[in-house]
Length: 207
Image (cartoon, rainbow, N blue to C red; front, side, top):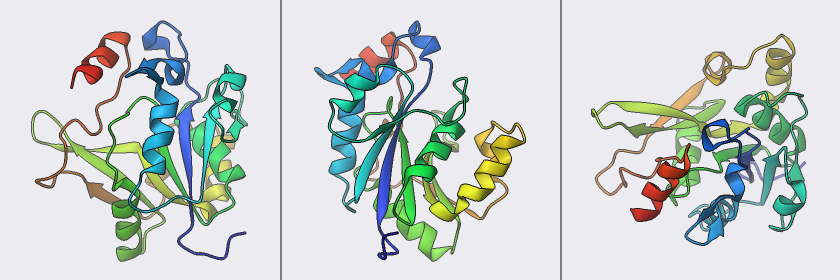
């Protein structure tokens, strides 16, 4: 176990079915000429607070993901069980005290994401910190897949998923969670825009 209490492993969530994208593997769709998963990896490597390691959670096309040069782990739960299965895989494989999760379909996420989540985690003595982003109507909505988790939450998540739990909100509600709004004057309103369909991916490219 890494002795640095601030050390963080990044986890790219690319394990979904891509059902709204016609079943294509979302992380391998091109965005500005590079696969979304690679764009996400590069953005993690550019974070203002450095990460110790980055892992990818994927359930298909593992060789293609491995070619990006970082470890790739499929879900430890069968049946495309959603983002919590990715969280579980990441927590099981993480060798640092903290795990940062990001989805593969949101390529413009903030470069100070980790820095701000980490600051809130410490300031509020929380178990996890979650980003929140402004909606078109002005409300700020949590983005639970952008999460900084203490690795010691693994046991709690194992219990939750083994009892059939699959909803992120239901699990995070059991813990002290710091919500971090990304709605400051310099924050991009598109930072958390994600691509569920090929049309949305083209819209993101046009930004």
